[in-house]
Length: 229
Image (tube, rainbow, N blue to C red; front, side, top):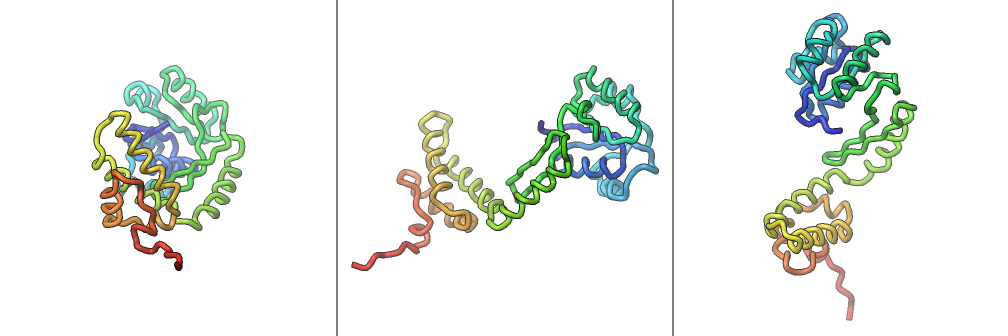
């Protein structure tokens, strides 16, 4: 479920709400936090000051904050079970996706533990059954992946992909197949370390050979091993 550029309402301003807001900022959502001034955490106060989020300093009002504001998504992180259920019920009636913290039966979606390395994003979720376990699994993934330059390799591959599209424009099947074959072969033949070293000059050399087979890293950098006669 994407939140890119969408208005999302967070009800509450404590530690759980603060964690939710961090996820939403990373997803480029337009965030409104609703809670009394005394309930806003120091981190959220900082984000308000930096204009990363909007704060409405009062208790949640179903008429104003749902019927009038019509957010694309609502996250509830308050201590009152009855108020949380009331918000959940109204969201369901209005077909607004909602997540009530620590109440899986009142969640249309779940948050997971996110691993990020540049453009690479991996989310681990337990569907609300064991949030702490998702953090443990994410740490295992991070320990393994951080040993290789996955993020930089993917970033450089993305630059190459855009240049190949410029070199072989068009949306016909033949053009699409050619672009996909090229990028796939380079992804499989080059190591992560080699892809991470794919600077702009090397990319231009690669796309210069677009009508031939994709070059190997060794050929491109003149480091191929020459067998003795």
